[in-house]
Length: 212
Image 1: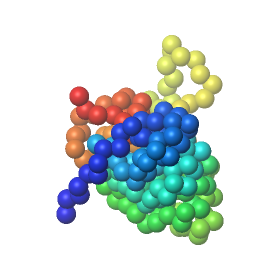
Image 2: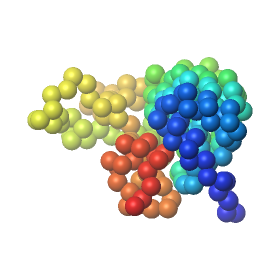
Image 3: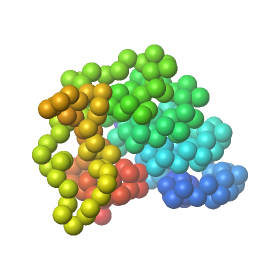
Image 4: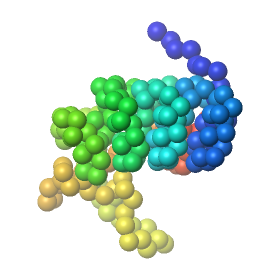
């Protein structure tokens, strides 16, 4: 069954993405609907969760944002988005609203699946007695992948002390000689197009990027 996009809520969505807490408060007080999406089906609470804007997420929840709303393109709920990005404080606020953690995205993955791959946020799910997803299933669901040689190579022009979060070995699933890392989640999973660049997806967080 096809879903009809709600009336465009782009101004609120952009304010949320920018982390402008004052503007968000102003828009909500002037009547912006916290549960309306932008024209491309992105919801304010999912944006806040993905970007890690915890206090804005709290604002939206206090304005009765639906904790189980899902973006049209990926099917990501706020819990999916926060778990993918490892935003523990956002998850803390979301869990207070008793979200439905059984909801799946367009690739059949739950927020529990994404949280299973990250020790830093798993306690938010473990305390609810969620069952941690096995390594085999996380690989099948494209949540994690085996570390490749290119993950270990640093750019000669960039000397950094820490590797990106997505290429750090996952201690829970890794063993000596066999390491696993997070699969970068991006608009490559959008249903509408497979041509969108990973660079754009990372920059805009699967939230504001529109194919031009």
